[in-house]
Amino acid sequence: MFNSLKVLWQKAPVNQEDNNQQAQLLSEQIALLEQSLAQQPDNAETQKALMLEYNRALRAYAASPVYRPQVETLFTRIDELRNIIRRNI
Image (cartoon, rainbow, N blue to C red; front, side):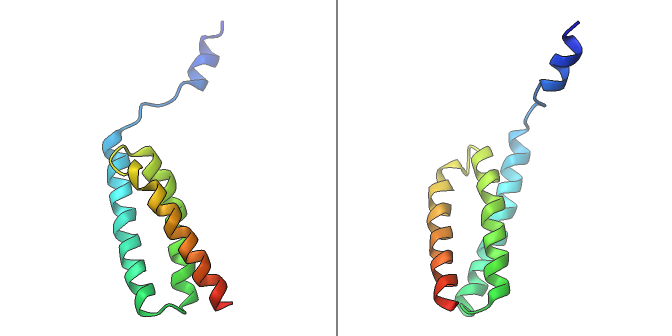
């Protein structure tokens, strides 16, 4: 009777390789945006894009065992970016 409900609540199997690839792509995008921000620290569009990528990366890094140790560093970078944004306002 409850088998149909159990099927609804079962988690799909997680492919760690997909998580690692997504985290790698986000890491590459973040590196490019950080380089762009280093060249033009006042560029608001780059700041916004970088903040969005950081937030996407948090979830991807947490799901990837390879990138999980970098989550704390990512939080530090988010704080630094917030400070840059505050100084520019």
